[in-house]
Amino acid sequence: ICISSIVVLTKSSSFSRDVEIDTTAYLRRFNYLPSISENSLESESELVSENDMGIALARFQEFAGLKVTGIMDEATYKKMKQPRCGVPDFAEESTNGRQKRFSLQGGRWHKKRLTYSISGYANVRNKLTRSQVDITIRKAFNFWQAVSPLTFTKTRGHADIMIKFAMIDGPSSILGETYYPKYGGDATFDMAEHWKFGYSTRSEINFLQVATHEFGHAMGLGHSNARGSVMHPYYGGYDRD
Ligand SMILES: [Zn+2]
Image (cartoon, protein in one colour):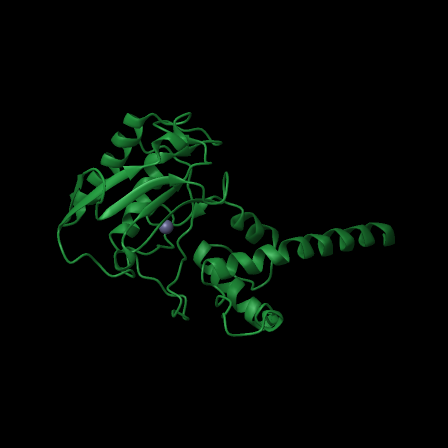
């Protein structure tokens, strides 16, 4: 009994030590913890009190639809490893953790006819052809065009919404990130993902699903904690084509 409990203790403490740095960075990245202030001393600003960490974890668990315990557990850790959108789940000033379904948190466009332009095709040409990219992006904009007063027209060179494939953080983790209209509305897709046009398996990322989500941000929509909502931050892995 003694030996096995020692093994369990060692295992769980090394587990929590391993994820602690990740957890803090992750919670900061998505605005569950305040980001590091440039004015404060590095050693001071990187310290997170146990209480603040508990509150941040509880907010995260609530938003992710997990059991709210305020402590790190396997389900929470697993959720943090799930591929997702790079846009924070809350505006930085938000503290109560409440988010309306389809909340307009990023301002909105002051015109209805918007243009978009795509670059960086070459970065994903071994996964998606140029026409697969064009078709998918058109489909994603059609989804939003049908439910909003906005129209999206493809153009070359400068456009309202500039779309590109570029490196974000390598495979998995962050799939794409998009600025809200008040910051320009531009979208980036991580060129390192296993993008797939059409039916996608578990190890592939359905491009239409991610593109539709990202363009929701380009229109000013924030994240929804409702699973199955197109604005849910986590990649669901289902086939929408
Ligand atoms: Zn998002």
